[in-house]
Length: 309
Ligand SMILES: [Zn+2]
Image (cartoon, rainbow, N blue to C red; front, side):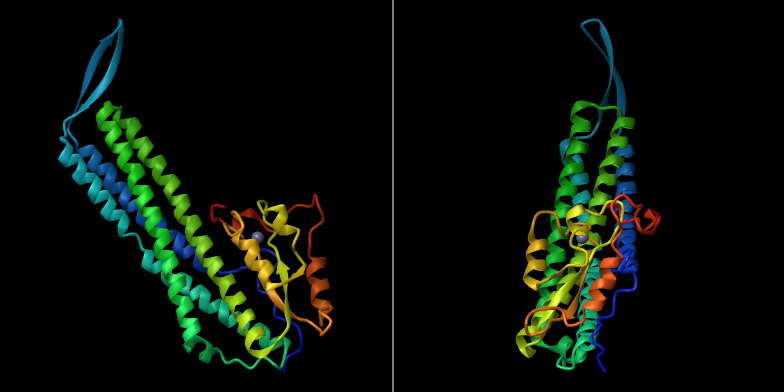
């Protein structure tokens, strides 16, 4: 029997969007895959025969390096690099993002059933329905597109580093340092993609089911905003904590700028009366009371989330 109160996420005062284990697993996987490519590239670079040359320019002695590799061989390394980056586990990330979408649908299904008797949708039927399957296909396609862009950028960037090193006869130690730095940047980006795609997919599933409940069953809900209070939580996100907003508002919010990136906010449905007021104001009060006062230390210890945000 519904009691009118939606269940709050387990970690709602810290990381409302949840999915922490899933995010960490995918981030670890991406990092590991990139580390393998990095090791391979450093090795390939080391294999290029080189000799140190000393030049005298205007009385100043300059140490430079001559790399004894011809262009086709260099090109071959860069192409292999591109191929290896193309083998990053995009399909695994797509699986994780799909699982997050499925969980979002399931959690919303439970929440809507908890707030009203009128919500009669069975989860198994939703998951087998054509609209749901189409959404999943779109969600997966988006991940592959993101990853293709990422792989292309990374391959181009590192290819440039390598070409420049050979052309300009750069110090091999410096080149290897640069390679590591660029991989570091790429790892952060891959982590950000993993995290953002998983959390967005989870949130999108909830919004989609909220919309279906309204359009198919005429259930009037508002969405109660839960913000995380991590040290880097954006004030514009924290300001929404405890507010009851519409589904359109949430979609527009995330379509704007970088709002979706590294966001840990989540939204839970609350039933609205005919006049549009919240039928169960108790839960809204409870959430609002958890809002930390300005100047207080954050609720969460930063070690709880090492997602690189
Ligand atoms: Zn947020």
